[in-house]
Image 1 (cartoon, rainbow over the protein chains, first blue to last red):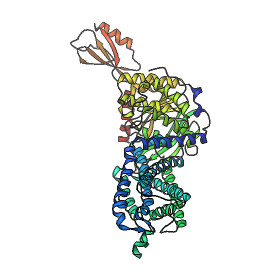
Image 2: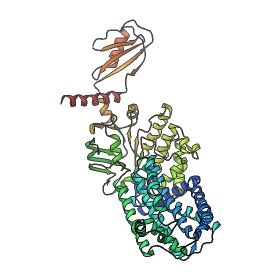
Image 3: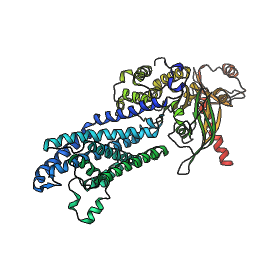
Image 4: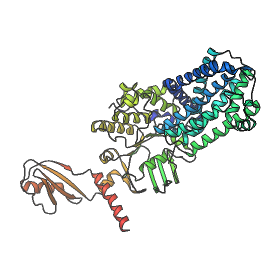
Amino acid sequence: MDKAVNSPTSLAPATQEPMLLKTNIVGFNTIVIREFSRIIRIWGQTIVPPAITATLYFVIFGSLIGRRIGDMGGYTYIQYIAPGLIMMSVITNSYGNVVSSFFGAKFGKHIEELLVSPLPGWLIVGGYMMGGIMRGLIVGGVVTIITLLFTHMKIYNVGVVISAVLLSSIVFSLAGMINAVFAKNFDQISFIPTFVLTPLTYLGGVFYTITLLPQWAQHISYANPILYMVNAFRYGFLGVSDVNVGLAYSIMIGAAVVLYVSCVWLLHRGVGTRE
Amino acid sequence: MQALTFQQLTKTYKNGVQALKGIDLAVEEGDFFALLGPNGAGKTTAIGIVTSLVNKTGGKVHVFGHDIDTQLAAAKSCIGLVPQEINFNQFETVTTILLNQAGFYGIPRQVASKRLEKYLTALQLWEKRNAVSRTLSGGMKRRLMIARALMHEPRLLILDEPTAGVDIEVRRTMWTFMRDINEAGTTIILTTHYLEEAENLCRHVAIIDKGRIIENDRMSRVLRKLQTEVFVFNLRNPIAAPPVLPGYAVSMPDDHSLEIEVSKDQSLNDIFSQLSASGVDVLSMRNKTNRLEELFMRLVNQKEGQAAHG
């Protein structure tokens, strides 16, 4: 082996007080770049499946069945479900990215690289959250392009579109992280998406307006947080919503804050990551 | 300055196991320190607490004066860890793993690229820089973990079984590398089951057993505590029976070798004289077991005996 060339005088970060801000910026960028590289490296798992699923939805529900359903909320059925389908892919992929990436790091033990580093927990949570947002937006963008192949889409309020998709992505990225923190095996990272997230998404007004439901079912639907996200997003495109958009924002912002604080606290306590 | 100190460090796991029962330890800056103990003694728990992978139950830990309770980020910046188990992302390339590691410590990409070349070259991994890490051999993976731990050029390098499962040739080259790093100023704490490794490399040793430190001294002083050693003499010609050497216990494992127990106050010169007088021609001589290993076994067994009778 070659003679080591380590010299005590070159040990800049250790011999000086840590430059925390610089460390944090470089560290955050490193996590974000690593997450982005992962999304691109396994594009066959991260981007292609939701694109195919969205295409099938548009072909079956939009073009074939949708023509027979007629208008909904004053728009053609395919136009009505388009925002919901985009939001569904954003939610699923934001959640899926963080839950699989963080649990994979736990399972492969390379989460220890981050845990032993000087990076604070709030920044590690932020980095993984950014990964979820990136995948949500990339997939959302792909599904939007597919949507435009099937129908014309207008935008009622671009600010609402952007903020609703960002907040939803943040909420579900953080929810995915909490799932990954508690998961002990791969079954437990597919349990919540299969038995909680998918039913809530399908019952969250993606394919219908809840005004079609009986009164009792409408009341139950109001307990579903995804209903607010889908409707806020739809409002941004079409200007119609089943819920109060202000209330939808309150719920999204509230959920984002509560989940972020919870993630940081769990990481600080070492739940699921330290003994 | 002290690189690492433990004060009454305790750890009790949720299942009630007391892994550390109030240990005190000090490692001086620049030292090459061996932390030894049988499996389950508490070594990895202690390292886990220093590197914040394990939450302590009680006590204090300082790394270069930084209290891990109040100055955790500063303490972590000083530490490089080579863990016992392979814990890098097996789907990433060697280069990506090292650049990411540097990034987690705030090292800019330009600086990291230079260090990457320096350490991969020194550890003979430069040719593998673009290889996906899971394709590396066991020895290469171990060296990659050392390179990774050095990317932020830590003042304290903790090596937890760094040569486990590595062939003897690679192990010896890794020893040379570790010595060089230590000579350049990096404090090293080594845990290993190869006691020959600890004896060769380390200047101080602490032996931990059942959560308590049972020995902590300079390596040379610890080795001097060994009251008797058994030497194996390889003979040039076969002999029919062991020679009688007054004052020495002699056994003959086969017709070409003798094992002689020698206490601290006896002399090897005397043995050679007596063997010559008996017409035994000695070809070579060696310790039957590694000296530290012998002492380690005696200390651990002695403590177990005391516990059984106490």
